Image 1 (cartoon, rainbow over the protein chains, first blue to last red):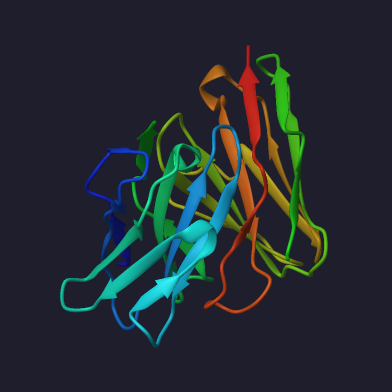
Image 2: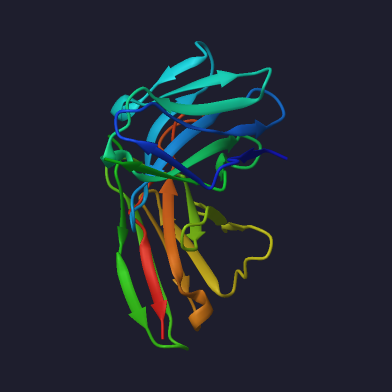
Length: 114
Length: 116
């Protein structure tokens, strides 16, 4: 079965510092991996995806993620955090065998302090 | 970009009544839509996959008679919570697929259901 795990419930960083939100995956075959962000009482906004190709993927709002096949990881990164980045972040894998549903990690709450 | 509209954004209903939530793809056709449920500060739990013109596929443990899903057109799926109870209070989010599996799903803004 396809799954993703986010080992940290919460990540705290100071504004201007780099941030990393961790994600590991377990899939059969090549993974289709996604990162989404959720602000309070809102739906999910797409940040970036990895399908194939370059292991470093750049996305919206200055975020990027690095696909590491040997470590089965897809960590989300940003060189310089903003207070407005504070939100709930979800890593997800697309299950191509079951109608294309997205399977989400547990979510990581990012808090960026001034 | 692809937009998914979900309505209502917030609803309060009395125990025993039914509530309908609509999910519309505004600028694309969606043969498949997904309904998720989310508890506070938790992950999204897939409830069902809605397929246009056919019956929805429910995840294990989700009562199909309680959570009725209809996907009558390529731009509209509805979720009806029947005979709602306080434990059904939650945040419900729909999403739709505009392209293939290597494309992101597009999400509505969610519906906050409170059953009193």
